[in-house]
Image (tube, rainbow, N blue to C red; front, side):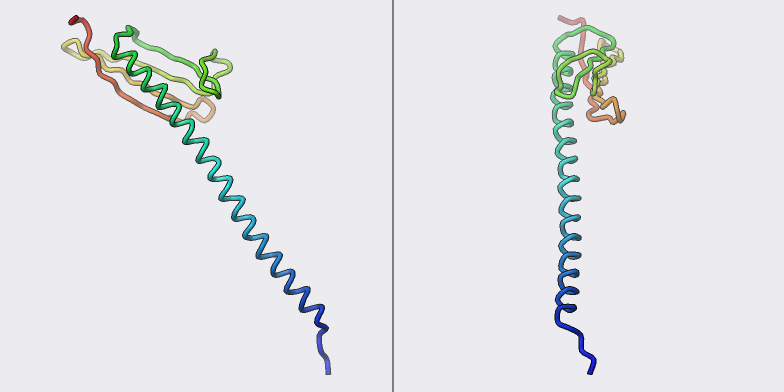
Length: 127
């Protein structure tokens, strides 16, 4: 009679358990990496929105300019263009009846990804 030793079955069972565990671990690592990237993107979008809202309020309060570009580093501090990660562009468009529109966009320079885009209306010259 030809019988297999019990140690061979035990070894096969251990290999299957390790394979299943490795698959589950790989899935967990992928989920954690994706969640980290989502968190970084959410923080960047939140900060971009705060900067864009601040620019919109300053524009509506009467800051006179046709076009502004402000550069920010990775910590959202203003910096020069060479060290910038993010950029805020404000471009003014004049309509009739003393109404002005400004397009405000915050972009990530490296990927050219648009984080926030706002349009603000203001009335000038009637104070």
